[in-house]
Structure formats: C-alpha cells, structure tokens
Length: 384
Image (cartoon, rainbow, N blue to C red):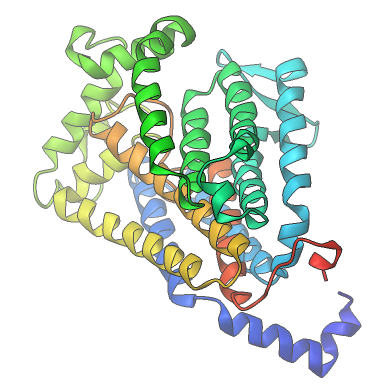
C-alpha cells in the first residue's frame, strides 16, 4: 500500500475500522506483563535499567508495533503464506544442522553477518500455520482417523527431530506439544489419542536413557532427585525452590530478594525470573501475574472460538497454545515440577527471540479477530 493510497478516504477509513476491531484490552494486559518484567529486570540488576530492563522495554515496544501491523494483514495472506513459511523454517533448520554456529555446546543459530537467526523460533509459527492450513481443507472424517494423519505427523516430526539434534530439548517439547494439541483440536479420534499417550509413556524410559544427551539426561534424573547433586546438576532447581519458598505470602519487598540480588539464583533474568518475582512479591505477586496470563489466554482462545474460518480458529488456537505452554513449562520448571529445559516465561523474561515469536503469534491472533468474518477458501482465489 502506497503513501498516497493511505491518504484516500476509503483506505484510511478501512484502516481505522480494522484498528477498532483490535482487542485493546488484550493489548493492555500484554503491556502490564511486559511492564512487570521490566520492573523485575530493573530490580535484579541492582536498581539499574541496564543491562536488561531498558532493552526489554525497547524490544517490547517494537514487537508491539509489529503485532499491530500483522493484525492489519488480510487473513487470506496468512493462509497463502502458511506452507512457504513452514518450508523456509524447515530449510533453515537443515542449514543449522549443516553450517550452524555453535555456542555453549549447542548448534542452534545461523550467523547471517547482520543478525544471528534462530530458525526454531520461525518454526514455532510456521508449524501452527501449516497445520491450520492442512486441516482447513480436510473433512471431519479425515481429521478423526485416516491415512491423512501421516501428513501432520510428518509436519510435526521433521522439525522436532531437527531441533532435538541441535540439541534444544525445550523447543522440541514445545513444537511436539503444540502440534499435537492442534491435531487434537482438529478432531482427532480419542482412540488415537489414547494410543499415542500409551506409546509415549512406553517410549519415555528408552528416550531418556539412549536418545537424550548426557546433560539432558542429568536434568531429567535431577528432576526426580535434585538433592542428589545440590552443587551441580541440581543447583538450579534447588535455588529456584529456595527463592520461591522464602517469598512467603507477600514477599520480602521490591529489590530485597536475597537469592537474586546476591546471585545465588542462576539465570535470574531469563529462565528463573518467576522465582525472583516470587521472592520479592510472594504468593500474592505470583497469583496476580498468573491471573494476567490467564486473561491473555482466555481472550486469545475466545478469538479463536468466534472465528468463522477453520484456518482462523486453528491458527489462533495454535498460537495461544504455544504461549500457554511457555507459561506452564516455565512455571513447572521453576517450582521443581518439571525438568529444567531452558524455557523462559514469555514477556516477563529477558530475551528478544522468544518475545518476537510470542508477539508474532499474537499478531496472528489479532488478525483472526479483525478478520473473524472473512471466509478463507482453499482455491486459487484464497489470497485476494
């Protein structure tokens, strides 16, 4: 759209109407969560905006604008680009396996000179879009139980295997659970679901013993008995639980968390920022934050529910599921209810890649809301 087009009354009025369809209360709650993250990053840095709080706010501001821009796009454009985005993400994951940059023992990034790219983040959006587009054209019978299930199985399995190879257990789990949830929402037969759960339960022990890397296996075993190595592999989980428990009902006070301020709490700005918040604001602070997350999830799922197109429903639900899994996995990891797998708390933790992924997902959710009455077809006229 050109600048002159924006000045024409019809185009300008259409843009204003679309902006009016955005869920601005949803946007406000996102701002509150990101603001809470900035306050915590300011606190654990010793009451300093650097090195975390100021960049966190700047990134959120840019990502917020990106979300609004993406919400203005016609939903049929997202539909047309679904498979290409997935394909590009898959090719980039293959490129990572071949020539990716190794950092801290993991090969997860592509160094493009200007920017370091983590293709697994692209795949989180690409997988949601690809599965939503696939099921958009499928009948209820095929979605329940048929040979067509091999297609979504391949769409999910290929990136999961490539991400596991990097290795990145947390992202692989997110991709597998997100993909599985979309398949279930699309109408998968309960017989298949029960069989898959049983097969997964049987496969977990050999997976842990023979497939996972040594450090990943230690994390899983440490989850079962963190006290077995309190100064080694169990250190993260134990310090997190100490911070959580020491906060009590109302916390020690803003800026007074000893575990985070004295650097006993590892990765306090990313993976364990929720534990730092619990130490300073206690149970009340944790519940308040979780209520904000619950509000975001509820409003996003409501958007998926009111969408007229199957593609819109599944894509909005898929993006929401990804966000929900971030919250659940990080919360469980922080409380010692799940192994430490390096999944941050979205919008609260410091980090640009996860924030970009989450806000692009919410741009898709808001696009579904703005275009909730748009009928998406699978033919050549799907784009315009």
